[in-house]
Length: 157
Image (cartoon, rainbow, N blue to C red; front, side):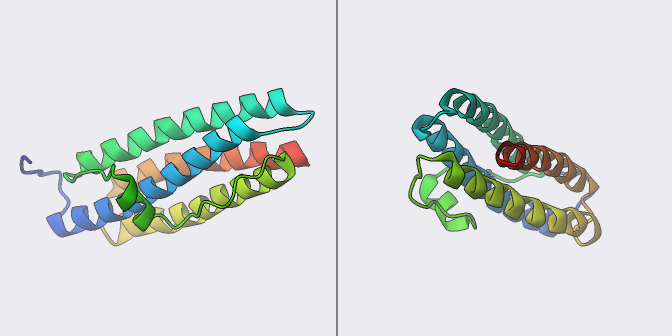
């Protein structure tokens, strides 16, 4: 890999990349869970939820790509091996419920865990690692997750 000189020390860029890879792993878990719920939802709101889940997993796929590109931007490699992503992830994959009354709270809880982690990392990236670009990047992700969580919560009232 070519030498990266973006005003952030290699030690700090390495730490940022490691944290971004953990976030990437959680995004993969949430993406797969949302996609699975899309395939397996049942009930009178099937079509509506089928479409909602598709919108959300499509957005998550874009988030995954953006995180991987951010990792490359700071001069490191993005993890793509499933076995490693599962080791890095903090989110879990439970059995797949088919009813939205279980699916929606499960997805909302995962978004909320990601939101809480992002809030912590936004400050850490800026203050500890002197990487305002990655901090700003995470702020954008935070807003996307807040909106997806709100939409899920709004569905069940």
